[in-house]
Length: 403
Length: 136
Image 1: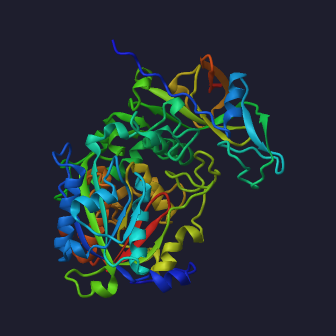
Image 2 (image 1 turned 180 degrees about the vertical axis):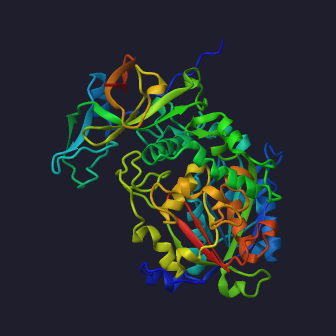
Image 3 (image 1 turned 135 degrees about the horizontal axis):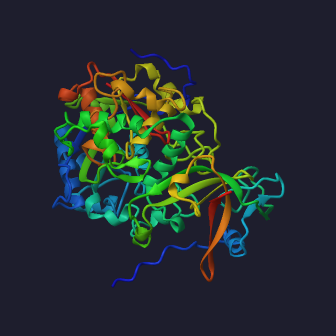
């Protein structure tokens, strides 16, 4: 099953993090729209269910690692206050999906280095209460200028992250001959998965005709290419593998990880070489630095049985698959056809429906699903014999988890 | 009747001021490295290619081609609601950097990657000029 990747392993990673940290508890609140519960209330439910799952008391939590704070989410200090936690370790990023992996990785590093023993990653979010923050007048991050992170350029009316994904998909379609109908395979597959998830908000199948007939949000992105806007919370608990062995759940081990990539060759919503913002243009074959996660895990890409990614917009799934070399540059739109990314296919993706069809809990719902899969507790969505799963985003960060 | 909110205008910084002042004179000015003789974008305090601080500003051709485009159908900002559906383009200038703007003097149906365009200047306020692009 485990195939050593040819990329160079990282000695420092082996010494400290590899196979040293495990996820030992997961929890989540109900997911919904306009829920009559505050962010902190949802977070408390997620924390409570994670504590019950791991069978520990909240007093055992000594670290918090959060990928977002106020106003979309809740800040670490407020969480500690209202949940009655006393923590010795804190990491918090600002409000972005691009820091989800970072929050999980910092939790793992804190445990591996002894800065904390039991770290909780809690995301509690009420998107439906904060619509004006999502690219609207209340979103200071949308006011970044001159081709910012997601190609924001407010003087031209570009303030939403969706615009960045649309610029990338439009060019991808022009360069490689992909179509919106090709892209539809992504949300259609994820909708099929959502129909098998008891937590999913979307309860009806999605057809190609419905996708193509849905309104445009930003050409070329249709409504169903954009994530749900929902409320919900999720919690993940991490501790040492050593301690995990004495806990009730089979440990889900952090085998390898790599961080977000940044630089002039990068645009957050595109694979390297697509030519968005100032990216060089020209197909890029994944380089050693793009694939470091496999070497660090000592697990080859061919051993990955399911792929989980931040699907805020459906093109991001294509770009993530190309970035990690599951297919070549420009090939993903064809590669995802024919059920390949569906349960039962070659590489199931986001098996509980992801942000596109389960709920937008900043993908912590998908991370919880990875844990359920590796415990063999994913019910009708179970990937048979799941031992190795990969989390990986189109901005290049990744965590390989194994049983 | 409610007054329509004003559209955002550029925030001038020490790094980008010369670009926006150039626009007011209907010129595309690019930050240019005197050491490696290359332009860069967005405007920064140093050359990202060679890290030199010896920057100057040079007038660019204003000519290029659309490298990507979108058409916005959702009113994220009330100030743009009346413009929907409006386009935006990224344009790769002959000098190599990519600017953002809108395609004007052509319908949205004309939008395509590779369309040759040139800069035009829209004096949106007495003190603010935005570059946009038209087919050439």
